[in-house]
Image 1 (cartoon, rainbow, N blue to C red):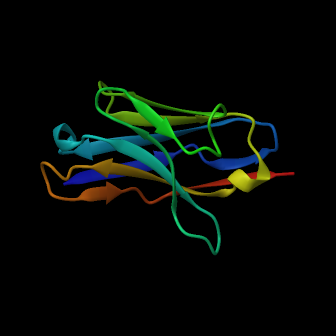
Image 2 (image 1 turned 45 degrees about the vertical axis):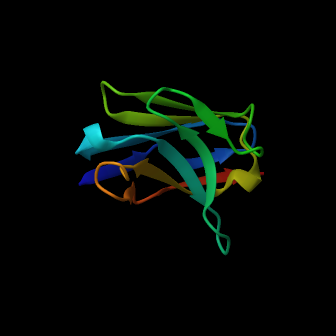
Length: 118
């Protein structure tokens, strides 16, 4: 199994920055792609950014140029640096780890709230 714990959320004014962290433990050697998702109240959970074990990244159009996903394999931690935050970025942010090739499933963290005030 894999355990994921997010941290770093909070309240910030529009234009500000936050850095989210996702610490993984357990069978971390099974983790391939990791990702950040977010879910605003009353909306579906959407993909924000992904990072493969190779380090290659992808971003949702809505966050390109403002968010940066990174991964420190030595610390088993993934990050999301969020700059130029907008009120529409307000959501619960979830960490996701794909272990389908090893454990046959993906794992989710508990989520961390990000609130951007206008």
